[in-house]
Length: 256
Image (tube, rainbow, N blue to C red; front, side, top):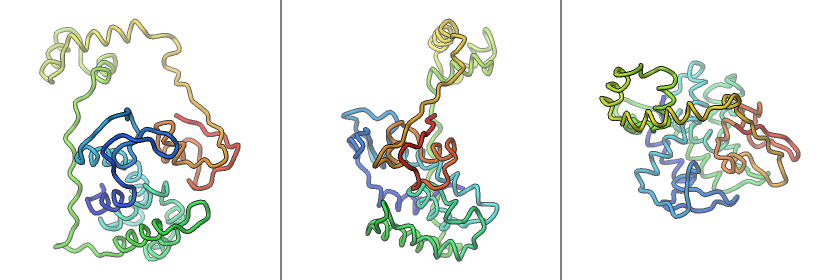
């Protein structure tokens, strides 16, 4: 299942949306609704582009809710509310007690997640209340929320196609040339990139280096994720973190 415009609107309302690149509190260039990937100083986007970035950035939160779909069979309103919740908190694992709580208990627990740094925040209280209201709103045949439009498939980059060529997905010789041309790609440009990658490979090129980060005073998982251009969900998965709000000074995190 995917988030609808109802859920996206809650996220945009409380996360905020800025159409010109700015530095966030941890000095990371940001644009749109908290988007940090490949953002450059002076960059400007449209509201439509901000929505497209958000739909892409929210996918990990959709996954965090979808993993419990077989257990709960969430309706669209419940799903939307929980994706907004996960996008803010990091997951719904604790909220659902790893899938052991009832729907009613989950609804009752949503407002409890209204603190940051141990303090109750008015903004979080309002957000949790709105998420709980949406979660408890029945979905009837005449009032189903409109699913967010699926963006048109993006044309792959030269580098991505070159990797596929190297992997053998486009055939060889004239067959490759014909397929690439029919798909709208420049055979000459793609082949040049393929040659560049093949001649530039080293024996260690397949071994990805992992970065480690030592948690300092005042750090949050959100800030660390933004700093390294990754997501809270990935950091939690790689480091086996169950609660995004519980990291400690001196903890070493693996960044991929």
